[in-house]
Image (cartoon, rainbow, N blue to C red; front, side, top):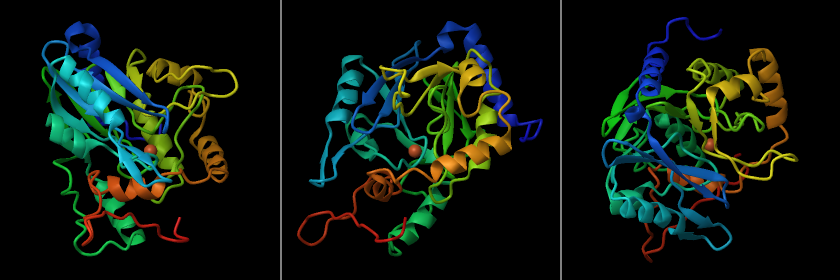
Length: 313
Ligand SMILES: [Fe+2]
């Protein structure tokens, strides 16, 4: 095993999950929303013993051809939260997404809640701040977010216990959230038949991702896993699916099941990444998401503009 034998954050996450598995009160209720335009799943995670809830990885719809945003996907989340009488305590991001814009600022305005992301977002801000030639007014200290999480940080959603695991590899800032008996691993693993996330964005690293995933798969087999994306693995699968278990990942994930070595994974991942084109929305997404989901300040005509750096990615 590549990670240290003692891993306090992972061990604590194991304890949280063990307690949750033993106690139905600690099993969050998860309502998921699938966005067919970007294959993203947003999750509303509810404490079964109160009206407290968190939203993980929201989507602001964006029509790139027209340069037009829409809140239709976010409004569906808001309708659900209001109809269920939930109190949103957290707006959690697993990472700065490269394939969709976050709706966190819009949701915060409508529902409240603290916006949180991983501490290493500052690395993403540094790297992409250069690519977008952001001036000194662009803060690279993560202060666009209410809270920056470190590995092992703990927080509560009502009576639910949650633990933060830093799981870099896809991006330097990726987090997994352990909430009760469930884990939200962001873009580390996908469904077992689809495998894992790419590691070729600036700051990504396949070896690091393998080690992060091994931390996750050392949690209890019964742990429920709620994914951030699903693309339907061709040709067999006809339905989108976003819930699995750690046990299923260990026995059948096509990239990282038990027995696949680190070197074999790195070779497979690197070869596969070399064949992938950039996500359609990477430039608008990272530009906005590294700024806490906020659009660039309007120019003197009142219009906001996004930049396209040429020949940089
Ligand atoms: Fe991602």
